[in-house]
Image: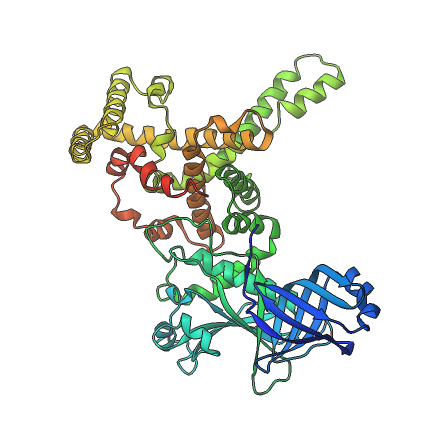
Length: 536
């Protein structure tokens, strides 16, 4: 995993909080602290420095700034006990305050300047919000412990001008309602709101540009600048959407408190939450991306989606169990065989494929419109699919599919467009054919996609066969579809939106599914999308 250091380069004098006579000449550069001293008192501190996981330093910079640094030792070199040189990895720097212990780094509140936050909430929206205080502050109570405010104000420091929008910055202030909190707690809260914004804003990445802490009892509200090493880089796995922002602040203003409260509750389910954001923030192979998202879905389905009272698949398994037990009662088995049969054959748990069928079915129309899912279907094998239609109609469907495959391979885009339009017209001219074509696509999307994804997970998770035999673009394509499905279900279960609201977000009411399916060309899709991603 990579990282991004917000620690700026500085030179100055440094010392340990408990030994002000032991001075080091030093500089911070590229997130590292380089120290040098010839003071023999260093020998008294050598074992402490070598054996400590974290070391706190005080410093005075060449810009007359007080600094508190939290760092870990990377290397220590001494030349015959005369000159001692240290290299440390800097995790945290506080400007304007000397704090004597790591435990003493506590704040009453923090303020965060995020990049691209104005894509969701801008100074203009704060000014004209009906709930803004003094036309500059919108505050929400999250729970008994915290409140969150969005502040329109002038830059705290000159460097914050880089993120201004219409002459102002938008800062996120998280305030503790239960006294001071440790820096670890504040980083966790900072991360939670950053995750929220990165989910909302799909067109741009949201990173921390600057971070400030506010001390308990500071009536003047002076901000202590906090620079740190971030393990979130500027490269993220985001779901590419037709909308750069999922839920616009101005359209959902009255629901924002509920959204934030639900999001912080979602964060409490740490395993499921971390599955999703470990995927977003850690670039890796497409195979592992698929594996991570499937792991997320397994856990998410069990916790948020599955309901044994309403699950038709589970009900069928229960009914089957009853039928099998009735038959077993008529046959004599020893106790060991009977236990095996009842525990294995009558297992009512849902398999991965069945879980995905339940995840896909409610949003199948969205999935096959917004994703060229058709590429995953082996169209020649349509003859093997039994969907309960007569042979004449099935023949028509096969001919439609074969015509589409022939058009897909044409080199001339203009010719393809005309042929696609002709094929759509042919389908629309026969009402029965049109209905069964959509039924076929729905069937294939639910069953085929669910089967493919469960087999892919088993391939990478259990090494059932060499995953390199599967074309790379298929792993990429599967990952992108899973990103979209995960986004839909988070909108539904965490943001409590219904299916119609979700389809409205993606302009689904304007889409013609037959046109979208017929005119999707996987070769063209691969050239435009996948070729840009193979370097990852």
